[in-house]
Length: 344
Length: 260
Image (cartoon, rainbow over all chains, first blue to last red; front, side, top):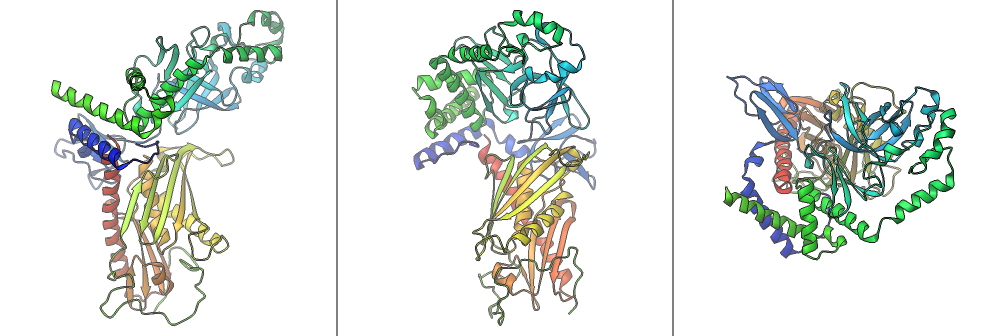
């Protein structure tokens, strides 16, 4: 139960260890056997030969692990997958990140990776699909698109040898995120799936499961899409005056536009989130937190399941992070796996 | 008696605040051959280690060797600071601090020098064990806090730091168990406590990567009879082997108990 801190009473402690026992029985002791520490020898078939994968080294003909984790074998390739490591990006991953810096022609984005990711100015979609003209002015107006500490969703475009990665937001679904809550979990808990953007109709909430372990839970944006698609960016002064009148529906007006309307627009959006919606967002966020603390995989079904269970048990939102709820979830999970075991 | 060469020039290893107290050294060994705390000369202190002590950190470990208590947290790999020069391999940034209540004399005045010295030595002991080329252009921060100074602090810090690095999932060639030893007259006392170190003539710290048979750091201080050196080194290496086993079982235990 990493991440949550509470004192367990002796009765609760007993229940936890009992549930853990059952989970272990269900999962088998496979995992414990496949676990290696740094410097441990990995058993390989020397006769048939082996290929050295990530997380391993060869010392005197023996294959040793260089990270703590689970041994994975694919044919002859032997690698070790670390248990708790930073996010390991792959091209095409959907990520949620936070802008840390506006640099020349690029934004630096924290995506829970070893290095900050780079989002080039040439890799973003301009509002309304206007062709970007490489002028000095649009570089100066980068802050009108994304500012420091803004949260954005993006896709990994390419990885480089030196460990850096480039992002792009060249689609309507990517862009700035607003009116929501960011929950950070261990990246290994989120599996790569076909769909990472979800609109939970029954709750009226948008959910983005970033592959990097950042989960975004928010009120749906007005158009049902990310707001970036209609974010203006001042391309040049001569166009600006004509077009600004058409951009009255924008969330982030350009620097030249009236500051007052900016405020009132913002207020309107915040006010439109009702108390019930906020509670639903918080309940979903806490469901994610509980799953993360218990080391259970996070995907839409498991989040909804935890949400519904918390409702049926009449648990208040704030009590979801307390010991009792976590233990009940563990026991429930153990029961489920037992049943699965029986079914097989 | 000859003065042994030291790999690292250190004025005095483990200068306890009241080192200036002169007096007749007490007998560190009883007539039966046991030490002040009842151990045999070649016996280590009871050790307790645990990973995951700090929630916010990428990896962390807590270690308790007799009276010495240490907590180490590891952050990163993360973006290097702007001010630092470009480097195409990773950077290891170490920092050792004494808690102000860790020594018998309260306060920072006596600890500042040691903090700097330990910081440098911790960095030297770890840098060749961490695969720095796997995280180019980034920094791994290792912060060690000595909660209670009870002798052999640096050795405990090194062992604990390598556990924390392993817990953070950072690529390393091997764990780095470290053991200290004190030489008093004709006796070598393994894993010396503070009282024993105070009266010791010489000290030795060995940090080793046991599964590769490599020493990452060997530090000798003080006065050493030449005949004792190889015996002491052998003792330390044996102790490192045993400590490595303890560290491995501890890391494994955490996984089996914590991750479902």
